[in-house]
Image (cartoon, rainbow, N blue to C red; front, side, top):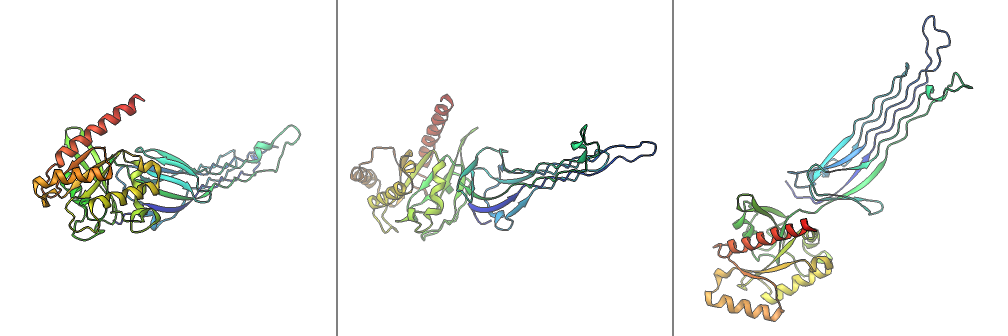
Length: 343
């Protein structure tokens, strides 16, 4: 299925049912009085997050959703049937915006979390409601009110613990293939990855984390060049970013230092919060260098870019260093979870 991470839909709350105009007419009961019942309330529209839904692709075809109308009231004080609420299932991690005001009205990040986005109309009143000591036979009723109508913009931001970023062809897809069950397309040309891929990295019983492989960034990604602007937002939810660099210089137009600087600039342009996220450097394709060249090359690059954070050297092809990297990532995530719980 094609990955779709944005959609615009229109939701309609059900109209309320109308009140009934009726009088009691039974044999041997003169002047029975008014007995028109109220209408039923209209159904409301809810968005509901569901685990297992990964894209907003279904909303490319169905963009209008309407809840059920409330039933009209009847004689003998019969109340109209309330309209059924409508639940629309969406992926976890979806943000909901009012398309007219651009206001964020919800962010569904937990399974089975719901958000009411269109209120159903209120029921109309039957004529029995208007009976009084001075008006014993009212002929007045009220109509049900109309339900809300809203145009919504849905934006999916993937829920992943770790996000992979880097220029095209640095080995992001190869890494997620090596450490998880994800099987993204891998080839020897840029932009092989056209949409995000999620993989669960399992390190033991009840110990795992989710890794996201995003399409490669290029210079100007924050302004919309390449595929970057569509997917940079998915990194905002990640706890940790793994900045991958091709150490071999093969198949890249830029040297490792320039690779780092390009991505660093694009993160800062997109959002300060993204540039300040915890980030580790991961030098890939060490199998293409002699062992004695790797450490000196890495040290030289880190000094030039003035990097003081964690550094890892791996080969996604031979899987050298990938287990140590994943262990450190898991330890970091578990420590973050404990800190968040304490706060």
